[in-house]
Length: 393
Image 1: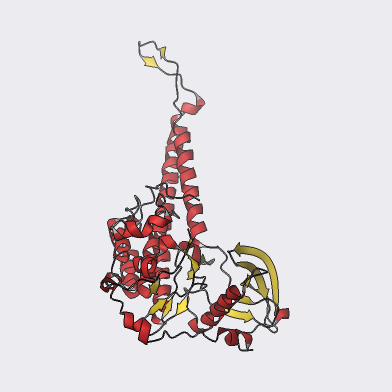
Image 2: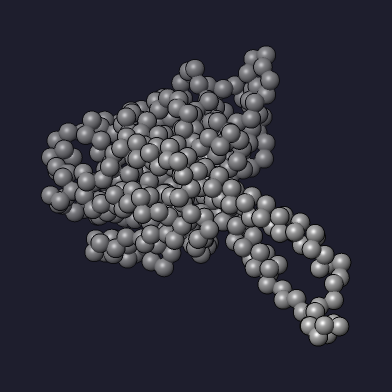
């Protein structure tokens, strides 16, 4: 959930270890200052209009639309791509921000767990950003589909096993009460039914274990991608399940760099304008001072882990956005999901430490998640037999 946050002029507190003189005396490095020139000049990323075929819409946002496209390189076979473009009648500021996003993606480089830039069209009437196509869509939708499948399966099992069978009793020649044997009561058929039930139960349990391991793998892959961004001094600012995409091979990639920024040596970015911000994924220092660092991305990563552990649940479902800062400052944090182990929840809570310097780095998180993933029983950290009711609109 987003709401529009106005910038407030407040002094930085010592508790956050941010030095005000950094902001006053040392200008932030910004590789995007000349963004307009960066995207308007012909370079290696420029794609000719006739090489790109725009197809169906696969996503929409407040200011932009994402299409599936087909890119044909010289003499090659058309390959699927995702094409992001602004809506018609956008403002000059929205155009400038889109130009910055294109310029930033040129500097980010390629990584297996980052949606990489393929090219851009800047010479046509509408700016177009061309990136890798991820066939399975965004992680939030994927998680909620899994939640829906499993809750529906639980309901069906409850209904199918809740039927009570009655039989008429008769007295045999020995004075004992017996029930008449019918084809349905055949002991061989009953044995087969029990064997099939055991098989289906084992199959369902194996599927739950496989999904639990897959979700831990997703968590590790995202941490690896964020470690790469942190190493390259890029703050994402909008890390959430909705901004992670899934490929056919179950490889996940971090996407949507619309709010991302290249930052100065101190890894600090100060937001200087009014924008819609993802409040329930934001760290305390971002809510109060509008300051974003790699460590505020770590906070958001903790919320993303909670989304994964609840199969797409809404963070703080009963908390109004305008009360978020007060509650977080008082120490309120989301409770442990019922299917989440103590070990995994401890990682989440470490991401939500009030002081950024006390939160783990992404390198540490990569190691912690790798340890869980390499465990002999990784499903024990996400027990999907205890599904909660976290999803909602």
